Amino acid sequence: MASIAEEINQKKPFKNETEKLIVNLMFTAHWLESIERENLKKYKITLVQYNILRILKGQYPNCISVIEIKQRTIDKNSDVSRLVERLRKQGFAIRTERENDRRLVDISITEKGIKLLEKIQKERNKEGQIFQHIDEEDLKKINLYLDKLRTIE
Image (cartoon, rainbow, N blue to C red; front, side):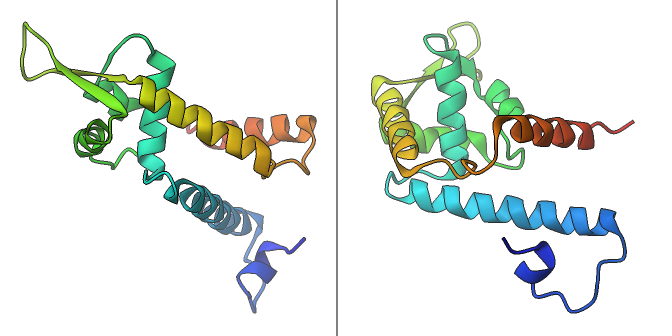
């Protein structure tokens, strides 16, 4: 197991543990994102599109507005409308205009989208989990600490 200092080939020690944690979190998030991006390439969807499909599946069989999808996405800077349109063109989502206000649209996942998510999940289970070497209790602690970190007073 390499330390963060070894991973980034750091020559000088970190100023303090806070600085080390910030660098470690950013490095680890990027590392994890790279793995996920690579795994999704064969399905011709991006990480953000995958996130949107998971949101749609969580709503299934109900629809959800583009505004609500944007609020729930991990990457808040994404152009959700454009990404949803791409998912629609691939047959993974359906876009329905509201009768009372044509500016508002509802999005739902298709059967093809659900099957894609199931296929991705099966493959993930087969390949093994990235976190399989961390026991359940430590995973709970990590989640607790990450939640605590985002709690800004």
